[in-house]
Structure formats: structure tokens, C-alpha cells
Length: 203
Ligand code: HEM
Image (cartoon, rainbow, N blue to C red; front, side, top):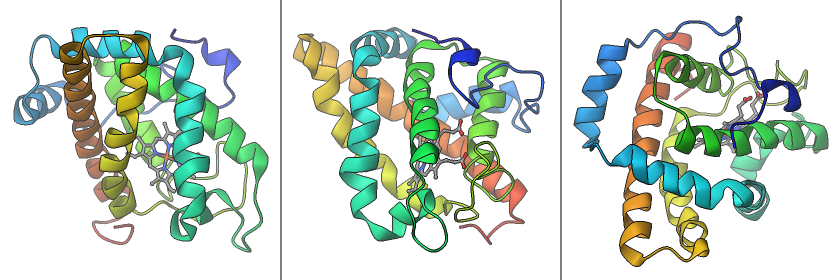
């Protein structure tokens, strides 16, 4: 379900303060062609969204507590510079992370979606990280770690896609559409990192 922006702290999808994306809709369309986007990918993403909807909390917990928390170089981004955990930061940004799974699957990839892609990317760079939750933590998540984490997310999402009894073919199609979306989104985020960080400083 697409939840109301009011029920998730700091979730401002479609809000008036969201800056317009520097990527144009035409560039998004071109990127879709590059990634091999097919007409039925949104259909399989919707199916994926329905399958993942009541598992989003578990999935984010798997990624964050099951994987990221065990890798010090990644875990530090949710802690203070001294290494103290910030539980509210993890909980609140985790809820937005859960909602992002649903947005990935259930929202149309229109101008609002494109704008919010830029917003999420900015929240990983020094332009905005920490500001939404008012915390003191690392200034940014390096782009390389985001890119390198994609295959981990793609691999670990599989059992959740398969958990609702769909055929192997449907699960494969859902997974393929999910992976293309991940590639699309990180290609968009790369633009934000380049714009916000003069090219390389947050690589
Ligand atoms: C493709 C990979 C990733 C995706 C799709 C993703 C997605 C998200 C989303 C949707 C949010 C919530 C944004 C918001 O509304 O504030 C978020 C926040 C956050 N993510 Fe990621 N993330 C990824 C990789 C990582 C990695 C590798 C780390 C580092 C360990 C990380 C650390 C964080 C942190 C610290 C926040 C809170 C940012 C803030 O201060 O507002 N993310 N992520």
C-alpha cells in the first residue's frame, strides 16, 4: 500500500519542498531503454509489490540488521562519529526504506517519482544526510558502497518474492523487473552524487 506521507516521519514524497529532478523525463526514458525496460516490467513490479507489501519490515531488517550492521564500514553510517548507535535514526529512516520498497514496485515512474529519487539520493550525500532526522552521524554514504550493495539486495530479495506461492516463471519475471529498477535508480542517484559532490569527493 502507498502509505500517507503523514504516517512516516520525514517521508515527503510529492511534497512541495521536494526539488525538481535535474534528470529530465526524456533522460529517464532513454535510461529505461538502456536497462532493457519492457512493457510488462511495471506489471511484474506491481505483482512484486503485492508480494512484498507485508514483508517490507522484515526485508529492511534483513538488510540493515542482518547485513549492514555486521559490516563496520557500513554500520558506521547509522551511528555517531564515536560509534554510538542512534536507534531512532535507524527506526525512522528504516520506515522510509520500507516505503521505498513499495514505491519502487507500486508507483508510476513519473515526474514525482523522478524528483523523489533525487531526494533519496541527496539524503545519502552530504547535501542532506542526517538532516531529516536531526542526527550527528557520518556526512555521507559513499556512492561505491551503494553501487556494491545492489547485488546483495537483489540476491536477498529473491526468497521474499517467492514467498507468496507464485510460479517460478512469475518469480523470475518479478525479480528481473526488480533488478532493472535497482539499476535504473542507482544510475539516477549517480547524477545526484556528481552534482552534489563536484564529481568525486563522495565516491
Ligand atoms: C542501493 C542501495 C540502497 C538503497 C536503495 C537505499 C535506500 C534508502 C532509503 C529509501 C532511505 C530512506 C531515505 C529517506 O527518506 O530519508 C535510506 C536512508 C539511509 N540509508 Fe540507504 N539505501 C541504499 C544503500 C545504503 C547503504 C549501502 C548504506 C550504508 C550502510 C545506507 C545507509 C542509509 C542511511 C544512513 C540512511 C539515512 C539517511 C539520512 O540521514 O536521511 N544506504 N536508504
